[in-house]
Length: 504
Image 1 (cartoon, rainbow, N blue to C red):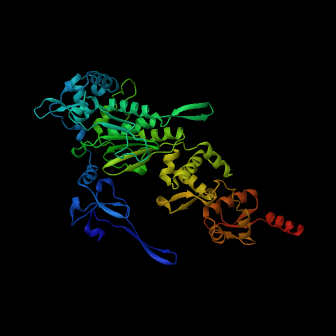
Image 2 (image 1 turned 120 degrees about the vertical axis):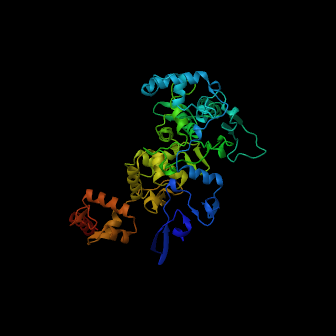
Image 3 (image 1 turned 90 degrees about the vertical axis):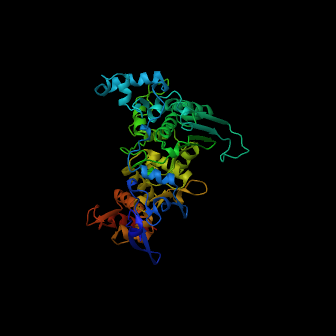
């Protein structure tokens, strides 16, 4: 059925697994490449036969959501479309002059010998209109226009500050309600100023003493606002929707029309080399347009914005943002709390574990708040790469600080019984006695020790290494790298315990 009734055809990997004394049939359906989405029922057609899973049910994709998926099959060109009746006189002259000068300096091979109009044409700020005249492109108008909202009223930013965590009730008065308009550089500046005006400052005590800092790091806010404005969908179906910024007592939400574009997924956000631009021309122009009153340009166009956002939050001791790709929109949620406060640091210290890395401490603090982590969330929270994240998560499992469910990319981690006691502290588990009893006078493999003790393989591996270093356990025959390696108690350990028994 999957291969015959669906387009493109699906060929799931089907396996039979033994589970709790019974056999279950498991079908794994790999996610399609973005260039092949959506998958739909041939009989119903792409518009009526495309669905998305929501909770325990299916919801038919809207025509706009289908359009969003189809747009990922190529490079959208909405930002290069002509804006009829809008010429050079609708653009801010000072911003235009600054762009032309910068392009001639930074790219002399492409712009140095061109006159002003030719520079703007090559940069696609101006394009050829229906009658052959120079008119502004949509990207050019949004980047440099005096007032783009004269022609596209909803291509703006709205900011609302709610007094409660629920927000949006009809009887509830806003603490602030602002509309931000103008070209993209001006909207970025004014949005940041508005958020800053509504933020509180909190005290942080560090090596340099007491410091008052904003609730949200400026770098994280700037990157999120810029991303929302430059990566938003500009197609006809989305021009009636604005970028929305919502502030609540416990979080800040930034939402833009249009989900993630191209090969970028929520799992790959922030990873090196992963970048895709829906509005390539707009972003290319803004790469050389400074923010008002600053030397910094609106965007670097290097795919480094998300990483900068995560790093600034980590440096501020805050939780990473929650990214939510909803096909028709993309949402970033910044939690408003300190990750490693005094109480959390005391809790980690009370675990009695030596040698934890800074990133492992951050992960434990995050698990204490959010209960479940995966490899991607660990990387986003700590800034380490996938290899280090996997190694450090395994070490936390081996220390019995967290437990793992699932394997490979489905692996999920949560705090273990050791770290969820009512007082939030626990004594360090010493597994030496259990392993020595299990070994007795035999030679056993790790898998046999797992069976006898009920401990995880990671925990067995960790304690065997400790006991080998101490001289109470030795390997028999094969090297440590062999899967057939076996372990036994050393003569020294047996003699020590024998003498102890005689003395008793």
